[in-house]
Length: 128
Length: 128
DNA sequence: CGGGATCCGAGAGGATACTG
DNA sequence: CAGTATCCTCTCGGATCCCG
Image (cartoon, rainbow over all chains, first blue to last red; front, side):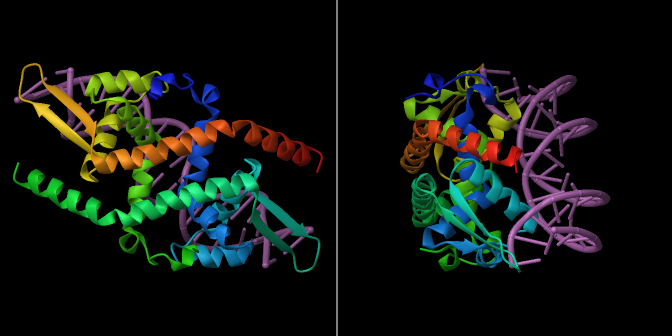
C-alpha cells in the first residue's frame, strides 16, 4: 500500500494522522505505556513518567486531555477533598498502547544496529 | 512493562526514544510507508507524499538524512548530470516501516470509534 | 535535479503563580 | 491534589535564494 492510496488533502481530509501523532507524541507514548501497567492518579503518573523524563504539569494535562478526547483513556474524577482523579486505558487505548509499546520495544532491541549505522554514517561524512 | 523499568535519565540515557520520534515523526511516517512500495527518487518521493500533504524540500531532505543516519534507508547518489538520487528501505527500515504502517492502518480502522469518543467528550464539555 | 543556507512566524513546551 | 492561567523561550517547519 502506497501513501498515495491514502486519503489525500490537508489535515481535514486526513483525520487519522492527527490521532497517530497524538499516540506517538513525546508524552503520549510515555503515558500510554505507563498506563498499560495499571491505572494511575495524576501526580503518581507524573512522578512515574518523570523517572524517564520530567514532564511539566501543563504538558501532562494537555496530553491526558487529548488522549481522553480521542477515547484512548478514561478519566475518573472522585468528588472528594482533596481531589482524586484516576486515569486508565479504555479498550481502544489499550490496543493503541500495545502497538506503541511494541514499536518502542522493537526500537530498543534494534538500537545497536542503529548505533552502528550512525557511526558508519558519521565516519563517511567526516572524510567526505 | 512499566515506563519506570526503561532507561531513566534524559535523552542521553534514552537514545531509543529519539529513534522512535524519528520514525513516528510527521514526515518520517509518510516517507517510510511510501518507500514500502518501491525505491523513489527525491522529487518523485516529494510529489508522491505531496498528494497526502505537501512537504517542503527542506523538511524532506532533513527527514531523509535523519532516517539514513539511523540506518532506516539507503541513499544511492549516481554521479550524473543532472543528479539522480534513489532512496530505498534497508532491512532495518522495512521492519520499522511495516510497524508504522500497521499502526497507521489500525488508526484508520478505528477512526470511527475515535470520532464517537470525541463527540461524546465535546458534548459533556459543552453542558458541564 | 538534489540539495545547502538563511530568514522568519507559529506553535510546542517549560516555569511560575494561582484556584477549587 | 489536580488542575488553570500567564508568560517566556526555543525549536519546528515553511519560504526563498543559491550552488554543483
